[in-house]
Amino acid sequence: MERITLALAKGRTAEESINLLEKAGIHFNDFTAESRKLVFNDTTGKVTLIFVKAVDVPTYVENGAADMGIVGKDNIMESQADVYEILDLKLGRCKFAVAGFSDHHISGNNGLTVASKYPAVAKRHFQQKGTSIKTIKLNGSVELAPLIGLADVIVDIVETGTTLHENGLEVLEEMESISTRLIVNKASFTTKSESVHALIHSLQTGLE
Image (cartoon, rainbow, N blue to C red):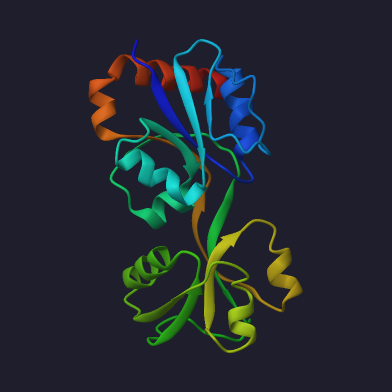
């Protein structure tokens, strides 16, 4: 079988993803989440892992630099990459939400200013509701935006809601549930079919 290049997202689910790969019989003996090394080979020589920023995983897979990728649904949605989404790996479960001050009404409120690390997700969500918004892209601490008047609301990932609560904000509307997914390059799905399907089957076994 042909060697598969797998892009793995750095961050909070990296170690869980490696544990899942080990359950699937795919071992990277020299991998640590803290390592500065970027390329790892499994013990069988069938899988090469590249360890990249989560936001870049869909780009690597879409452009064929990686045959497959393990990354959060949030980054897949924001990138709008043209890839196959094959498996829900059920890691890092959380959800997208619209959040703001409790007295802020968002229904039918055209002209909202929405701050988010995920402007494409926010824009698509409000477009589907027929609401016109202005988006502001932030890379961190989006909860600050409503507090200082930069935005009316935010669209962000919510896990426990603790950060929102500590800043006087709350979830105004729940959006899509998200978790870590397995994605596949469309060309690799065909040209490396045997290897791709073998890895998919192994991960399915690891999930059981």
